Image 1 (tube, rainbow, N blue to C red):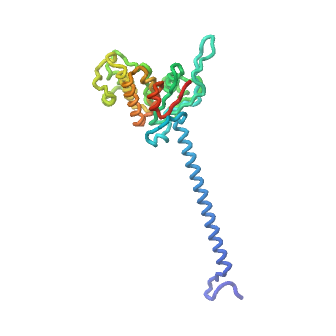
Image 2: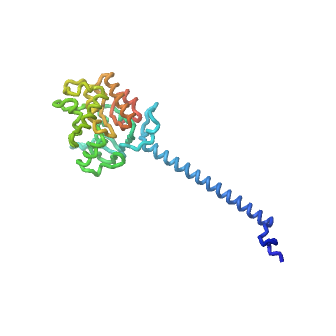
Image 3: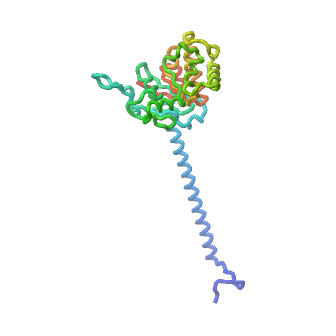
Length: 292
């Protein structure tokens, strides 16, 4: 009886066997093709999700027209986030004065974000909340992803010292100190060192006022005071620079020099948040938020 073996004892391959094997190979090829297609589709979906998350964290509330600068700034992690923030002040015998309601703002590293609006629209209040100097009525403030609303005042001060440089609208300096001594003020809690002194002098040189290091603030022009205040805000190398109306009291030439300085800091990777109604500064910003 023929048991399917040839005389050497090996199994003979019939035409049906060969057809079955070919069918099996084709089936495996189809499965691999479908599996590869699903893998490619999955990779595309993941890539799309990543791009979406990156767009969300770049603060595209109001992108400036003609936006330029390095493309990598698009994917930076936000240094500052205001989420659903309401700022309101109580008044005796009157309803609360609402400055902003459900307000969102995002500033990634290497971005210049301008909060624009008329005088009295709440720009300063927004900047003070962003810097942790005023607590919002509602909403969340995050510095590099860390919520600060649960921190005490002393903790906020410590966190701000290493992260944020703040310049108020008056570019306040202490008249009893020299320009260099004013710049060194933020280093006092951590003990001014030779490195701090070198850093302060380097900033004064970078800002073009190194010749004024030993001068008193009352001998400075408005633009020079502004530069000295910016140097003080930068002496601890903060990741976020916040400046209120940096060009408001300056002539056009001095204002343009300050704007150029802010753009340089942005290009160096610092996140910059300003409040202004100066159209030149608004135009230079990467991102804009308008307050009514």
